[in-house]
Amino acid sequence: MISIGLDIGSVAAKGVLLQEGQQHLMIIPTGWSPRQAGEQLIDSLLQRAGYPVKDVHNITVTGYGRVALNNGARTVTEIKCHARGVAALYPQVRTIIDIGGQDSKAIQIDSRGRVIDFVMNDKCAAGTGRFLQVTANALGLDVSELSDGEKPEQAVDINSMCTVFAESEIIGLLAQGVDKGGIIAGLHRSVARKVAAMVKRLGIVGEVAFTGGVAMNRGIKRALEQELGCTVIVPEMCQYTGALGAALIGSEG
View 1 (cartoon, rainbow, N blue to C red):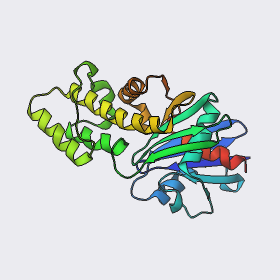
View 2 (tube, helix red, strand yellow; view 1 turned 90 degrees about the vertical axis):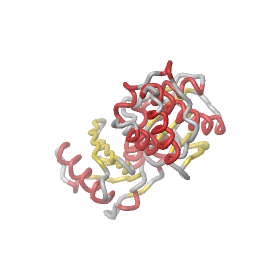
View 3 (tube, rainbow, N blue to C red; view 1 turned 135 degrees about the horizontal axis):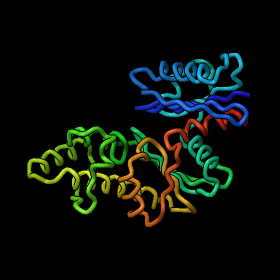
């Protein structure tokens, strides 16, 4: 039985194909058309695995662009998919932090990966990948360069979490000759404080996992651990947990 799970985010589209215990992973930019990105993922995953589309048992889609796919695929919320995906990878985890391009979430789950409660920030870019992207541009860096560029011992306070004001604040700090490494560390701390406050409102239960594209930023992980006072697990498949969860939910009917 072949199950395909797609997580079509605002920045990247991720796909997981499951078949008899084997899995194939793929990630591509979402671009301007979530529908096109989803269709491309399905075609590419099937080509890589060597199966025709007629052999697919189900396709389950989550993420920002889940409603754009019009091929009869089932849609499931990101909350449920990340919960199911993390539970499959780390059964001991009970608290999930997911930071994507447009929103951030904290999720509590039970031992079977079912959602108990969650909180979400989707009203502004604060504490999201978008915030990091804009502020990285203000520093003249690619967002992937932030982890290696930070200097935590020189961290400066970033007072605004509004993307526009934070960008102006960074430009002002650079004009004052403040070291980029200290600014980056300050940005990481600001994001971590914003997200940690959300997690604390929900309540920290059990072990904590950190998913989404931003989880690849080691500086954010470090800052989150400081703010939360606990170890934060970053799955090797941190970008794929939503797609994995979608594929598993689909395979379970």
